[in-house]
Amino acid sequence: MAEIAGWIAPIATMIAAMMTAANLGARVTGWGFVVFTVGSVGWSIVGLTSDQTNLVATNGFLTMVNAVGIWRWLGRQRAYEDGAASATAASRRSHTPTLLTASGFAGMPVYDSGGDLVGRTGDALMACASAEVSYVVIASGGIGGIDERLRAVARADLRFGCDRLDLAMTADTFVRLPELIPEDWPIEVLPARQVLA
Image: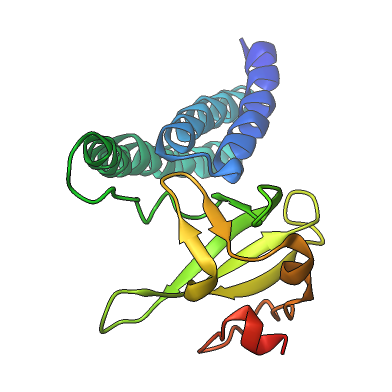
């Protein structure tokens, strides 16, 4: 039993870490916490069979933390995502304006005016009083976030789709926009024609 737990615990922990780090939605993250629970129970068995009280205590606590993660991501957050997805789907079939979920906005593909992929959305900054999008931060280049470049694109230069954004500019124009400093984003972004004039 201890030998099996000694293999299951690290494997489950590594798989769960990848699942939660990937941030692929509430269900994957929630199941990541389930797999984390398998790992923490495995580590507790290893600790019990090898008289390592600290390992048992730590993983007993982690099992409780994992239970909270399961409740949050497979319970509450999954319900929010399902509700938003149902409203989005219903809006596409009705005469009301088509809806886009704010939680699903990050990571949307962004295409240039020629239809070529230039990056993915990082975030959107909205005006508090009007709730209108002021500008969108787009990440391009790099792999898995390493060496990516961030650029801010004004709302006037964007067309929002249900599952993508389209730039009202070419990829060449986009890469000429100034790169953002990751910790210091602007309070206002001008349309590209003014920035590059």
